[in-house]
Length: 203
Ligand SMILES: Cc1cc2nc3c(=O)[nH]c(=O)nc-3n(C[C@H](O)[C@H](O)[C@H](O)COP(=O)(O)O)c2cc1C
Image (spheres, helix red, strand yellow):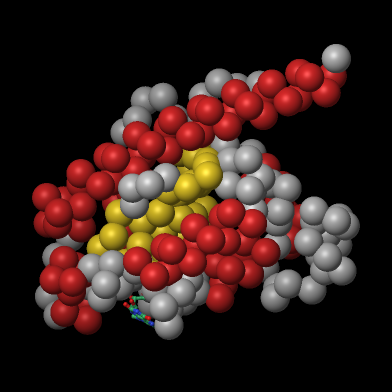
């Protein structure tokens, strides 16, 4: 088993004109700068997941849809996740909830951090995501990156003349570093615990 944490940055928005690529690229670069992680960007759009239509969560019955199985096999390769999510009607996008529902065991006992955005920093979406993570048996970092208020409108097309994400690094860089440091701790802790469990089962 590799000891280098494998981290996926998951872009939670799927619409063609999404803003989500901008924060996803920014946190991806920051995560990639850590020499002790393997980081990949995962675009939900490219998985073409159907709306959930299995007999049960894969906690109880193997999934049958090939797209769901491909999604599960992809998630299984990672030790931790950074969800980049907008706030849609005070929650996460339906596409991200569907993607979360399309796997179970592949999320279990792994850690995640959040980059959220919206007029109030996507905080309500982030809290919903944390609650979902409890049911998926995941550990959330305390710190998260919230792009909101004047920062949000200065980098989002809605504000006109959008600036690069780097222009608000003074506001969000510290929370990004905290979130990444905490994620590193939780990922290594859960990797060690999962490895211990595998060894115990083999004895
Ligand atoms: C269906 C929908 C619902 C939205 N609801 C909220 C909301 O509850 N709170 C908020 O701050 N922004 C809300 N917005 C504005 C989004 O923050 C903004 O459109 C953002 O760019 C969406 O992310 P995306 O471009 O990556 O899809 C909503 C946008 C959409 C399309």
